[in-house]
Length: 254
Image (tube, rainbow, N blue to C red; front, side):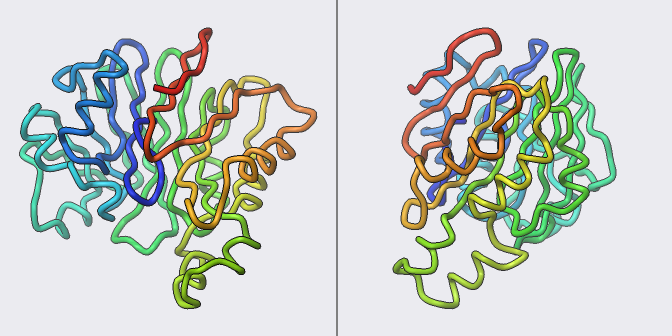
């Protein structure tokens, strides 16, 4: 995860020698800088996938994609909505399987206050990686699509008590708690209970609120959900630092 949180979101998935960037919520320069920390040349990316149009997910999308000539995959309704568009656009519908070389990518519709928000399940000969952030409700479809992933990137946005007692105005608290808002730690843990299996190796907890959550609270909820199961690595995304995990290796903070 290059970045995770309300100030910017972006994740790199590398499988079978291919590289995908999901979201580009940092400046083009900062995206390139954080990729360089992983020894990744942006020009070697095979595609950028976009979950939705909020600024913390597409801030650097247009300049980054044009500078490095990377194809960008957008939901059809989102592409029609954007004023500024990347140079190399590939549109998709939510029931379509995307093929990027040897990778198969299944979009998954999410409930969020955006035009056509989606998560993604990336399948390669090495297994599956699932990503679902920015969703107010973990639907049955979401739980079905994310089954049997080796790695999961799941939203764990807020602690319900911290949000209730925190500094946000009431209308914003209501938006966050709504079916089109964000998953709490407990809601994320309930989803994780449905997704745990012996092949799950790592879970990234994503999009933590800096005012309404703490890493310890998010990890505590997720750990309870995984009791009695295999023990995947738990990592918490950060807005400031790259959080990296490699199968068979060590996770790291860069």
